[in-house]
Image (cartoon, rainbow, N blue to C red; front, side):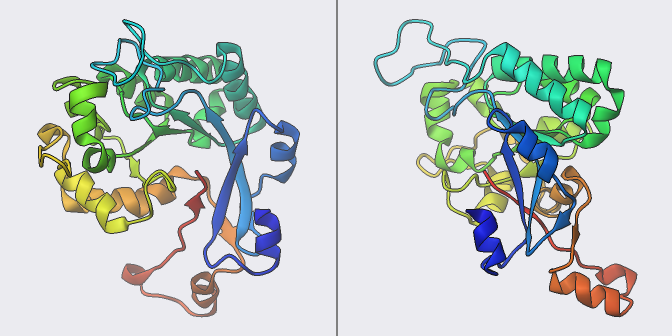
Length: 283
């Protein structure tokens, strides 16, 4: 469907598509390209290991704090894939030189993702250069960030959660202590890691200023509580997480349809005013 829209000239921005790795790997392998055609390209693969923290379906390493609903004692979420599927997907992408983005929210989901990347990189060391990405990582532990840094995995975090669901996390999903570390941007920066931030439409509608504000203030919209003061970052860092760091998190792409790039080829630009077009990730 997206290809048809692109061919009809209906895309006003460059769209980088990451197709489901469990559906059709041969399609991904055959179509992955660094060149946009009519503002669209298949950029790599997408894997989903678990669900969402606000929906109580993220796969955790501990019980949810006070889940609302008919949940058994000790309920900690669940996986959306088998360990074999996750390990196989990461291994396939690493072997075939495909960038893979992995949705992982809970601690156990991220443990599985770390194991998969470690095993794959042991066999295919060059896979680190593919810039694999962790999507969301809401319940990350500090040791997991250390592991992702060592593996070259770039976290794409969701600090806007602190605005929309900050109170929910503190009161029901993670609790008043662990909830302060939802979307741990501060931990990432203290390790010298870059991270990106997103709104995950249609979970939350596109709103760049809301993303920026939440990344800097982490203030819950209901109570006004600051959800993890130690995880806040400065405005410049938050802007980088929305602009130049996402550019670094994807493998180099070329676009023949971007007006800015076309103008840049026609005339030299001063070094301080170079422009580039940002490819948008399809959730």
